[in-house]
Image (cartoon, rainbow, N blue to C red; front, side):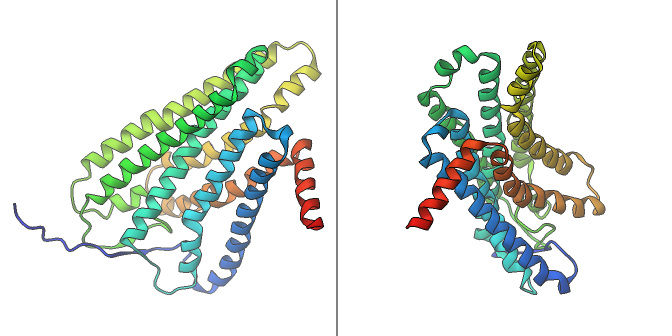
Length: 311
């Protein structure tokens, strides 16, 4: 076997988010505020669901999982990006890049499958309300959550291991502000055939499959709501799934915008904006969507805040 002529890459250079260095400090402050909001907002959601018994329902069990995913997703990207904002040379070690790739792919895949599980929960609640207690027991919810995380970890692990077997030579410049699969594959000087097969499988079964399942769930939900005679009944039924539907719409809109458009120099800049949406903006908005119109969550927040004041 011939020895490899490629030296092992020890670090990559990030292109960064913005081309104007004099704005870096301003954006650092903005992203720090948003990152704090993500961590605090989603942590409050988790605490409220754990500590407030009326929120011990299947839907809020999945919302707690979603809050964990949002914190994990943002934490896998933002700290390193903010550090690079304040440095002239924006670098990341090879091992750090692979860890970031694994964490980001894991969080993205988990949210994708988790939103499908949540849409199934809403489908059962609206289309089969009398069987809801039997179909969404605590044991079934735990099994669904374990399945969501297991599928996502397996998917992320396979992508990461396939990336580790590649050789990287020539340019070390990642045309993004974090380590994602497409910009890393563009730097490889070895065959990416197996990586592309895995991407195709993941896109077909994980992305498209979950999108179709979610769409099917909401198709049945809409049909059921339209069959309800009274306007108040329709309004009550729709209100039970409106928050989740908005989260699903925001998530899939940013994903479709990022991956469906043709590649060009202009689209690379738009990709970064879309990436900011699903790594920072959506995790910031999700806690607001689930709390603004929910009295029980507001009550739970009040109890947590009053307890902190007493202590």
